[in-house]
Image (cartoon, rainbow, N blue to C red; front, side, top):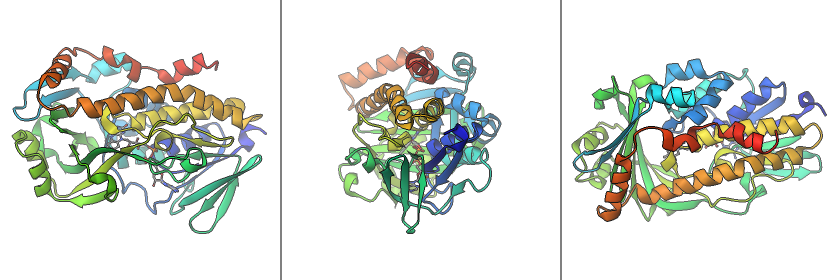
Length: 397
Ligand SMILES: Cc1cc2nc3c(=O)[nH]c(=O)nc-3n(C[C@H](O)[C@H](O)[C@H](O)COP(=O)(O)OP(=O)(O)OC[C@H]3O[C@@H](n4cnc5c(N)ncnc54)[C@H](O)[C@@H]3O)c2cc1C
């Protein structure tokens, strides 16, 4: 079989599924994307896209649209929850572009998704097509849909997120509740006037809680997320609308700048935060898990979307190197390249669930001293550097 004859089915039109579809199309491979939502863009909020993901977006051809529809962070700041003491400010801006050849984007998920969809020809994404299961028959894979339909492909890419329906074909597990829930909302840019000259990510750390906010949609709005310990959220619905007064009560005693942002929100949602224990397997013979379906992470290292983009590059490179003769070998190579990298990012994301939420005391003072020592981006070389190409080289590409 030639690459052109290969038929790939992608389940899910999030960041990972769309990136795979774009990369395959570039290489002349037939690829259909099946998305359960009836419309794109409705779900999600702000995403911080670090330069390891941004570089890939640029390679996909999304740079002009990303520069138009997002903000590039000048800096990342951390502050203390009650008195607003500045703990650290690490310059990004040109320092980030010089060191990592790409910016640190602040973007609404809908804008990111639109930038990617625009790189595909019309008709490649089938909306309203929820996949319920996948069955392998020798050298073909059958996809089954909730609407009673089915289709077959040579290989299936499961890009259907943390609550993936297809993951069960590879791993028998369930999402793990973190003990935290997150309030998320959007407020007008006027809530944080300093973002106009100094677009940046602001983290506020307090006992059992942290708050993050930054500009999205080219600076027209500010996205905030407010994380708090919440033992009951693991049994609650995945998301629900929440009250601003409840949110303010949760963050009683927090700095007025934070409370002012919260007060300005017209509506707020509340989500339980879930990941999964890392699996050894990201694939079967002809089904590959990618992005959150493969290795959902807590959002505390802000890496889910960037890791999904890295997965997409490695998976498509592996498939097109090997697949003409051996799809299972291609998927094994993808897993071998991506598992160590994503395992470390997953581990570090979980660690931050503790360090971000320390009670005031000696450990918090130690954390804050370490933050104060951050002068530049060198400590992020391992994360923002080119892990995709270097891991590939190690794996013999
Ligand atoms: C609070 C929070 C903050 C975050 N902040 C950041 C951040 O700052 N930076 C960052 O990089 N990441 C962040 N993330 C994570 C990031 O959003 C995800 O890692 C990323 O979107 C994963 O992309 P994906 O394509 O794998 O999955 P998703 O974006 O979840 O897309 C999955 C797609 O599959 C579709 N789908 C699901 N089931 C089916 C089915 N059965 N059939 C067909 N289609 C289906 C869904 O509708 C969806 O379109 C955050 C996550 C949370 C919860």
